[in-house]
Image (cartoon, rainbow, N blue to C red; front, side):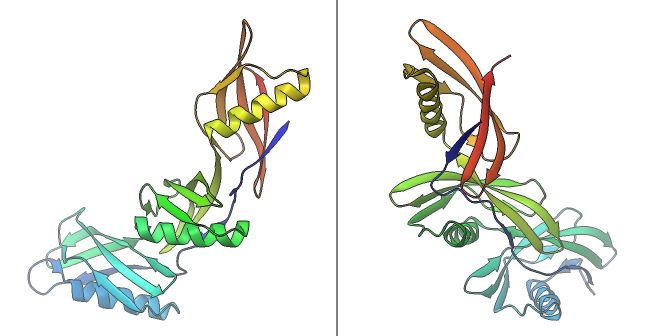
Length: 246
């Protein structure tokens, strides 16, 4: 078993907000829930849950048609904000029922990941760029490129649980293709006393037990294929084994 230490590897969980919300609002005229009504409802519910927001701003009215959605920007404080998605679940005459699910915009996710990496890995994040926002569904994921100390590494952000407007997610180390290839060459050199000519892996290796990547090692005229499998992850250490590919 081989251990590879990634510069910014972290495995942490964060609650975007501690609150459970679901609600229904009726309209006396057309089946539409106004922005103002949504903002009041969200603010009231969060306040009752002990999280009084600094501001709630909904982008548009919610049209009373099944499946219609709108988003609202909720700011709890300068370091905690999120963007719940409000979706129509039922329309009965002038009554519009809707539910809210948590989400983070690209910018909100960047702030959250930067804060988490800084706290968990005790390094100062110099730059961060997430490829997308993050939806509040278990298993939903986004990739963020995190830079610190002149090195930029990819991290997978994956939602682990959702309860009301609470979204817990993990920031998982992702070993780059180049890191895995270099580590594999080092390992073969230690074992055989001679470094192989090259190693080519099929992609990055996510730092979660059971994740795999295939690699081909070339030494002179000999070429062998191996499967790299993550066994355990402890902080910034990713432990893995490699075996001949069957």
